[in-house]
Length: 119
Length: 107
Image (cartoon, rainbow over all chains, first blue to last red; front, side, top):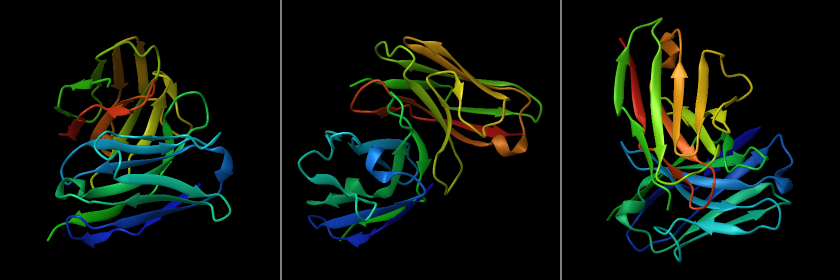
């Protein structure tokens, strides 16, 4: 399993950014995927999830209405569209693969991509 | 939302020692709990799922227990590579929530 995030960078408050997570080594279409972020020096914060079966999506209240999770199965890529960015969105963003059983836990993680929201 | 509270926030131990980290959920989550290890500048590493099941490839000196609201992660015979920050995560319902982390320092 390999997960490779990209798309991070410096963006001004109010701006937009789209993160990508290229997946390989597993059947991308059947696994749920999630985004977790970590602000500098802080703990892990779950951001968003997309279920492998049916594609239902979930969001943390802190990003609801601003972020959109999606996936392109043909490209084996997970996305996170981030709009109306705020300084408090500054973090390393990780994509992670669900283990595939009944619980919402994540057995493989990407290396992360840094998003900095600043003027 | 389910609040996850870990204790202690940090712990220092010597090679060969045993360490126990506690995680408490604000409401019952049965056995829907995972543990992760994270080292500085690295992605989290998945250690334990369903409260007590060791992920493939994780050394047997790691173990987890608990159910309902109270859970523990125990590391016996500490090794130098066990330093880092440990997080619990409730896997019962959305929004998924993590504990604040426990930093393990090897003396």
